[in-house]
Length: 209
Image (cartoon, rainbow, N blue to C red; front, side):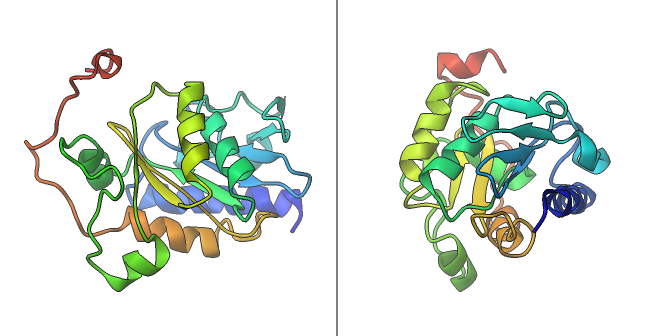
């Protein structure tokens, strides 16, 4: 698949997620691996509903910005997936409402934040580990994701939201296989109750409250 085709698929997937209410304004980011080892990622503060395929941020294999608009500061966690999980062709990070709520709840099982409610969840996700809270773009977040990526294709970022990787190494699965895995997390029926969320007692979370 050519870079131009990957760009168009990325924009199409992002628009689909936007129209279904899983991303709003500039929240969340998507990336796909390029055949040369680099990757495309959505620009900082860009809306999934209004992406321009020609303005997507392009980074090389070392994570250096080489073309397009300024990349999302969270590109570091996308690169961690690609480095530590070679079969990954695409990565999606969303602020989908139910899972963002879940990420704020106290007492989550750090090894698996959701019980095996459905066979589909078990087959597609397996387990959903909790990644400790870090500010967006913090290198520590990339390190934590890199440590989990060899064993997990989906993770929940504490007080933040889900990040999921899937697809073929060259990126051909960004929409086909990747989207199936994203749905396994994004559309999970478990939605925590309003009022149970922990606003965050960690001082690193405090600046957002």
